[in-house]
Length: 135
Image (cartoon, rainbow, N blue to C red; front, side):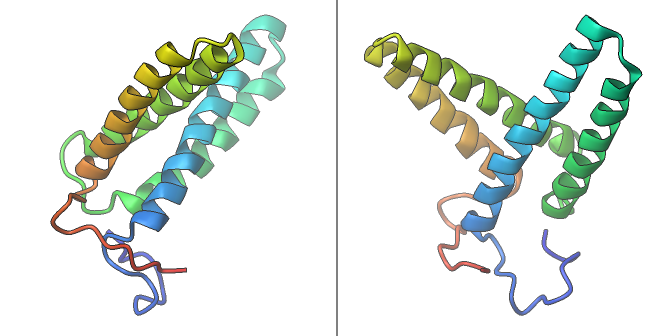
């Protein structure tokens, strides 16, 4: 999974901190792509399509770094799990702002399931997870 990094001695296999950072980045990258598309639809400004393409390139680069050993549809699943995670996070925030803590807590449990599935797709589970950071 981490073969693309030059300083291999510094990267720890199954580094959950690195994967968590990538999770958060990819969530925001997918959301940025969505906003670029929404902006294009509402303005028809071609600059928004260029912004979309640039956002996709960066997202793809980061996703490639963490999915090198993922098989079949895993790469695409990582992207979609991150997108669902970002949307779910937005819904949790919205329910919290309305004072609906019970619904927010239920959605937070679903968010955790998405995150654990993301780790699972990347080959990380309770047996092989590392809390040793590469940072």
